[in-house]
Each structure stands twice: as C-alpha cells, then as structure tokens.
Length: 472
Image (cartoon, rainbow, N blue to C red; front, side, top):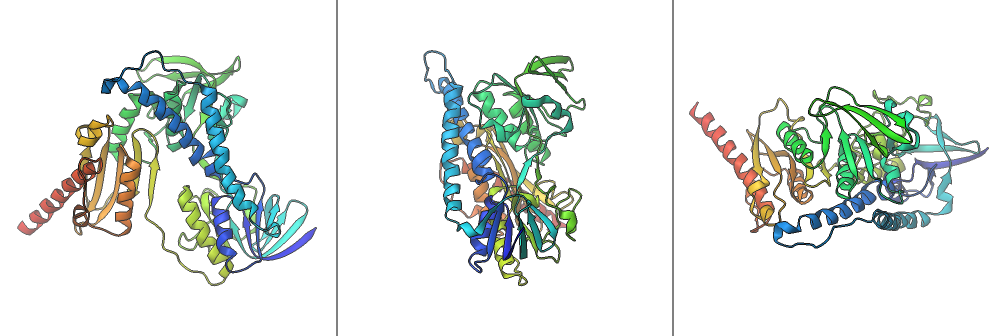
C-alpha cells in the first residue's frame, strides 16, 4: 500500500472537480484528482450537450411540418432517418467530450490517480487496495446518477436512463417515459417530434421546475395538446415484460383502463448524489435526510471540517454553471484551508429547452408563498413578434414586492424563454426594481416586448396598491 501526502484531494473529475483543480493549483502544487470512471463531464457525455443535439434535430423536423402555415408546401412525406440523427448526436457529443479530455490531458500525471476513493477518516482516503492518501483538505465532487424507482428495476435491458439514450444507433418505434421533469419533457418531446410514439407519466402535477399554479396548468395543457401526458393520475400504471417488450396497463385520461406495448421505458425520475460508497460513515460529517453532507453554499465547507462538497453531489442545484461555481469556491477554500472565504453566489435560474421553453428566475412562486407580492402577466398568444414567427404559445408571470417594488422572480413557459430568463436573472442579481426594468430600452418588434407588457401589468398593480394605502 502506497501512502501519499497532499494539501488537497479532489474526488471526481467532472465539471466541479476540474474547476476545483484549476483553482486549487493556483495556491499549491500538492493537489490530487481521484477518478473512478470515464473522464468527461456529465454535461458533455450524457447531459446538456447531447440532449440539445437531440432537441435541435427535433426542432428541424417540427419546423418542416409547420411550413404550410406560411404558405410554403413541401411535396412528399417528410422522412426521418433515425440512424443519421443518432450519428450526428454521437459525433458532436464526442467532439464536446474531446474538449474536456484535452483539459484533462493537460493535467500533470502526478496530479491524477485512478480508482475508487473511500474515507478512512476526515483527512484520509483509501484508493482501492493500492493507495492511502493523507490530505489537509478533501473535496467531494462525485456528481450524480439517475434514480431508478423500484417498480421499474425488473425490466432489464428494456429500461433506459438518459445516459444510455445517446448511445443508441437508431431511434426506437416507441418509448414509455416515467417522469415529467426536465429530462423527461426535453427528451420525450424531442423523440415525439422525431416520430417516436411516446406516453409520459408524472406525479403531483409536476412540469419541470415550475411551481406557479397558472403557469403549471398552462404548461400541462400545452404539452398534452402535443403528446400523451398524465402527471396527475392517482392510479399508478403497471409495467411488465412480455415478448421482450414493455407492457403497460394504465388508466387513460378518459377514465378507461388500457394496455399498450413499448420498446423501452425511460426512467426520468430524478438524479441522486453519488455518495453511497464513499464511506461517509467513517467521517464526523452531519448528513441530511438524503445522506448528503450538510454544507455552507457560500463556502462549500461541510460543517467545521476540512471537507468541502461541490457540484451535483452537493444536491444544491444540479446545473452545470452552479457546479462550476462551486468548484471554484471549493478549490480556493480547500487550498487555503483553514482560511475559508465566503463567496457571492449568483441569482438562481433554470431553463428547460422544450418548445415552448420553460424558465424560472430568482424566487419561485412556491418560495414566495406567504409573502406580500404582486404578479404581472403576459400571454404570448397575441404578442406581435411571437405571432409573426408562429411561436405564439406561452404565459409569463413577474413577481414584485408590493412595498419596495423590487423584482423578486419569474416563472414562464414562453418562446425564447432562455433569452428572457437571462435578461431577468441579470436584473435580479442587480436588485433592480420594476421601475428600473421599465426604464430599459425595448426594440420593436421583438419577443422581449412581451416582457415589457408583464412589467407594465405588475407596475400598475404596485401603483394601485400604494394609492390604496394612501387613502387609508
């Protein structure tokens, strides 16, 4: 057994781990990255990038189906070559992974060790049966993996997670999806538009990350108008294997009991932190009810220990930009331990690349529950630019504080929501008021004019509220 002494040991070489390394190495050369799997981030291999490649293909196919609305007729049937769709996805995915591998290859060999890390105590790790690492500080950046509900585990190779979809050589004829969150909706809608028969089941009315009842209702109807979506049924569907197909028995939205068969089932039922084999029981870390070490999001430090946690493994916000930010914080603080600095965190926001896109910015409706806030609204069905480009489906809510006029947050299903969300999250981080936002320029005709409509709506409500207070 070899023993190594380092200042910083980083478990995991994903987005957070690599960001932590780049920052730790600024302060000390005694840094070690431990990786048990393939190098290359979740985003590049099985997440953000390949899923957006699938969505891009679907958008291309969908746009061809709508040309008649502009008076443009395409002769003949539109055909989708599933093999070529998947070839491009894998080719471009491998290119993105290649960029990550280039970064890894630039890391000095002495700074990388392969194997599974397990805590012996707060400052000691054992790597398989060959190495003991003594570290002044340790960063947990082990990422996350798909959660599989027990009732799906009997389906063998007919059960897939998003990690496996992007290794397909061809598109299946049919896919059953459990989960109406980000992964389920993005992949499900894309495959539907590429000619795959899908049915999607969720629970508790979930649509992505939305919490606003009106936006949720509008979104559910929008997706249901395009494909079968049941996210409210109190009766759980039954699945079984029959002739190498997945047999589904379920209560249809019309109340009837029906049966169908599918090629595969996609478990899009969330992700869990990769922590169960780390030996956390050998540390004195305090864990939450999901077994995740409790940490300070401004320092990433776990309690009063010399252990830090970053990225998806922290279960804070499993998003690439958050993982990268946490890696920077963890790497800096771990390398300078015991000196620990609090970092400023960016405003929260999330984007779903469905069509229409979905986004949340700042505080959500649920987080604002019980507070005194006004809601400004715009429906995009009659919004000028949206109608011009035949993207006129959507609803946006802006939240503002009645007393101060401060912009608090927003939820939306909207055309170009990815761009609207960026404008709003920058405004939220700058702590702008609704008055401040309305002083900003809006070009004509653009989708952003819809945002101004919602701002004017909430501005009027703020004025009415304050005028009514003066009369009392």
